[in-house]
Length: 82
Image (tube, rainbow, N blue to C red):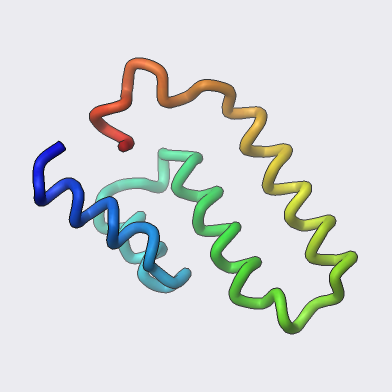
């Protein structure tokens, strides 16, 4: 992995929902469901303090279910997505 790609990967994990949204828009990621799931998860984390634990658990389970529907989407695309 190149140093530039390592920095980009590091940035992805430290982004808030606004930054992730801009990243998705800038990179054409709207067609990449794993990025949209990351955005949903980040938005949920950002409002965790404002919702009940039960509501959080329900929304988290929904995101998890959608993630599991993707299957092994990364197989053969490792260089593109990691």
